[in-house]
Length: 338
Ligand SMILES: C[S@@+](CC[C@H](N)C(=O)[O-])C[C@H]1O[C@@H](n2cnc3c(N)ncnc32)[C@H](O)[C@@H]1O
Ligand code: SF4
Ligand code: SF4
Image (cartoon, rainbow, N blue to C red; front, side, top):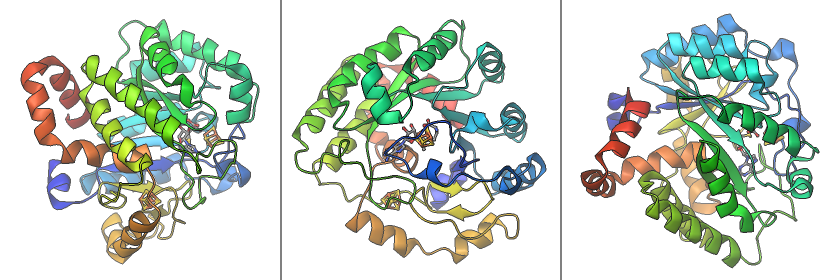
């Protein structure tokens, strides 16, 4: 993995392993074109593709979709990826979590991110399209009761005009339930995976959401959460329209579709299929200039394409922090690099 970082090659696979979903979020367009089960990669195909990705130096995988827990073989997929040497993170809306799968996932030391954007039932319906807040909260409670959760457990919030005033409540809700917290702004640059929603967008006045991220940044700093603080610094720049850094799509992460096709990120239509050609061949045929044009003209701030790159670029700031908080840094390095 270190070799890939030095060579500017991807380390993270964002695996959208299904387009099926049990929610209808207006910010997302994936659920509108669900995949057919017969078109989704089988366990054997996943094994073959991920063997190739591992030998190319990739280490991390986000298991998302659609809703990844909709796949009946999700636990087998997680086991397989761990056996192959990957560090998986399951990203879920939390509706299908239960005592059984939560315990299995925890035992496997799989990282888990549960998407929760609000603690208000009416808002939840607006943001997620379904009346399921009580169910998600019940499932989060199941997770919070697991002692010594192995792996990193996060609550992730997508922040929009509907919920910007809840960021600190969500931060402390996560903390009080034994989760880490992160959040990213609502994006709708290309609408291949995202979707434009007027109630959520903050086109005309960004000031309130910038203020919300600034409060969160200060809180993270106070709580010694350097990585979060660093990412929020850049999220604020993005919201202020000052963000033009290289996007790490294709350089640090790639997207793998449920059919095995790859693309630079969630917002680009997938093309080459890894059932047919190797990752090396596929990357050599892909054109980074399209990514460059995209981030210069219509940048976005997705966690999967921005998070790791920002942290890697800010090593000096992390180093200064490490001298004061060695335990926090050691935990991070252990989770992500080994
Ligand atoms: C596409 S979902 C797939 C996993 C799962 N269904 C879920 O919702 O957690 C992955 C993450 O992207 C976030 N997301 C969806 N649409 C978004 C958008 N337009 N802008 C920013 N984040 C978005 C979701 O809230 C979720 O945390
Ligand atoms: S954001 Fe997640 S839960 Fe919502 S529709 Fe998209 S895939 Fe489904
Ligand atoms: S800025 Fe990067 S992650 Fe966002 S749509 Fe463009 S290429 Fe994709």
